Length: 440
Image 1 (cartoon, rainbow, N blue to C red):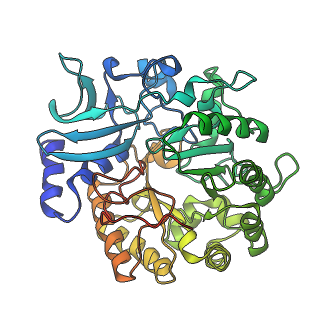
Image 2: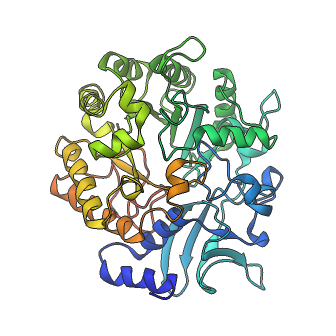
């Protein structure tokens, strides 16, 4: 194509039913964006909400490789609007890549813009520092460290266990840098609590509830690494569930409660429900049977793909199919050395998985794969999956939802271009702009 701009414009022309905003968003998510020093935050002492590194690094370099962006954090997210493509408001999670063809910088008037191939393609908005980030817990910890918010303030992201008990090359998911992200923050001397105390979480939520007067925060997610043994004497269901129990007792009905955990046996899933969790995310990661074994070796060893899927279906009997929303990592289907060689093959496989779950009323969602360089798949595939794969996935995802008469899943805010806030993929941007049914 000769330039990144030409490639993007070609895809917008070939797939006119995919919002143009989603094309740019997917390219930024899969390949990252560079930041001019004029576009970086002043960390927690500034007026811009900084990137919290809430679970994974979601960067294309380690902290030492990010230059000034490692000292002055970039914004948590950016909003794209206007420009020559007349972009509607689009919220994008920040994934830093100093060598990206995309760059955020201020012009001579101090106005931030997104530049591609040296041309300004949109205005850029950054999230203001929320009032609740300006207040410390009684022990001096920051709210951003204990209970960061993402999706433009919609979601409180509670990574209460910041490492994973799938450890080493024979167990870790091959695209996941949760353990490295923990190590790099500790090495850099940054506060990064491994196991968050439930009372700290409650205190942080009290601060958010007090100062979030607009009630922008609507949901919380409890998550962290897989637990194959115990943490603090608790198994996985009890460990994550006891946070939900405490939150629901202290703040009944204030937020939609969600938990990301392994696909657990039915009795454990019932415990989540009993503790007050409303939405369950038993992520299946990648659909293809062989790729699941190769790229999720710990999950294959401890549970197995077929049993994982059976447990997802069983959980719908407890939560209701609409409230079971398993994630997959979009793009690893094409990762070398074992992935599909063509976009056609990858889309066919992923669509098979979508149809399997959607035919039973379960609506998966996806995160756009960021090839973090400390992971095996990131090292082998620094460019990630082709942009065409991501655009065709959006088309296939919406079509499959329509085939089975499904609406946008609860707990993700409004769907539609110009309205969506879900920031780590464009699936919500690509759905019809109808009011979601948030009740669960």
